Image (cartoon, rainbow, N blue to C red; front, side, top):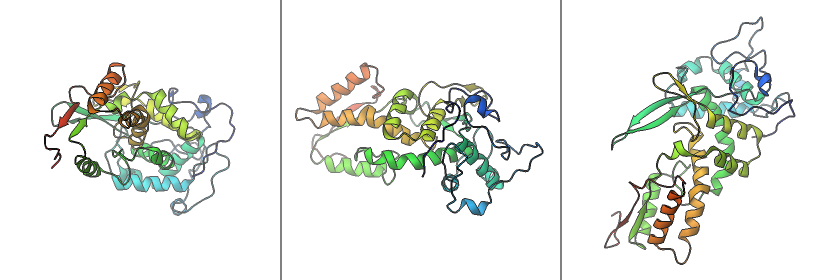
Length: 322
């Protein structure tokens, strides 16, 4: 995917500037929306004819629009839609299902592409859904709209090939080609060499990620302006509670977003994996030293683990996970 940005008057605004997510993007520093584009829900009637890109053209590679500040190929939006459709999922705050989005597919994809490539796309609030946990309590999920899931998938498709090779091989969560079963298999093999397992639980991980540290990590791996712009906007998008109130967020990335697992892994890589593996590979490292060091990270204010759930497990025969 191409990643360029033309010089425009004023840099596109970050997610903290969200007044009027409609047509006056130029006042907010982004490029103004084309008169050919309809609003998010329905078409504008201003004496113009909406001419979305023919659907057949989305399915093949087309030259990028040189008039746009961000060079995002239409084909990428089409591929992102196919991925979102395959995963299905519930409607977001606008109540629009995938089937309803698909009813005007070419027009909806055009509107989304136009805003993304113009710098005028602002994510709507994510819909809060509380999922009951088996041991009591709830797990908060954030459900983006269908259009926003497609937009996130466009960015994920660009960013994932860049950061994936950097992640530690022993990291298994939310990674392509890896699963929890693979993690259990590796742990079982290693239990023949060690008779203990250090079980750490990160409390409220998705909700406690520091935005500035995450953005710093993202900038370390890419200088693509539209990716960094929209990642920041997704992080700062508010949440709409089940009662209908819209609440601002100050940390974290919504668990349920398309790009959230990748961002969470990026943060965890530098926030835990790198430090932990350096510690574990030292000659003097023992389970007691590792456990106490992790405890120190927690006491220093880092969101490392949930003390009530973290523990050392030791099997007297060494035959663990049998």
